[in-house]
Length: 330
Image (cartoon, rainbow, N blue to C red; front, side, top):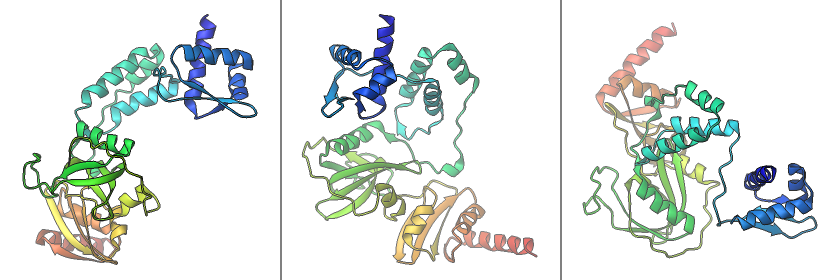
């Protein structure tokens, strides 16, 4: 009985590891006959697991959707990886700290003693580096509402907070009139959540910061998904200058005109920068740092000509750094 139970657990693990298996592959991996495999599959079905049979010359199996949740089976490396990820992943969603702590406790409780000791011995402490330019965490309820619409292919209706506003209540005038969009994809980049969506009213694609979305009740209205005109969602978000970004809260904030295309600047600008289209070859960029010299240093990484819009403190910092570099090269 113990051997059979262990084999069923391994069979579940294999079925969950990839979409489909042939019957012969599964039997070979388990070291059993195809007849025993069929009995084991029936045993899983009796326990509530939706194992589906595939037709074909050799036949096959897949673990369907629904039914009972299979047990989480992790090998030693996977268990340690999950524990480390829970302790070090930056939290970009508000209100889930307790859930993360409980998940870590649950995993450690079922770990073998030697693995639990390995995780505890790491003494992990995650400290945010200022270069990460993070955004404030978003509400988990907002993420769920937007994710639900994306997953189910339903129109999403929401109020959108203006970029320069800090007031969170939807009755405030800083919210735009309600938008109705076809949500396509959720993207997290540079510590910020973005919604890529198509707006039928304007017949255009757009990118919306999820932390500025106030979702209305689910519409339940389905739509036919469109193909994004860009090569990929990631490329679209990273190279778009108009993605709703706002300046990060820094002691120093400066603006320059840069002789580079907007899509290039948008791709490499640090999180918390604001990219504005000027011409196909010129970009206006606003970014911050803990010092004026810090901004000047970030601008130098683009290796492009710039014209400083302001303030004067940034101009002074560039002059000082220019003299230092000139002296260093003599």
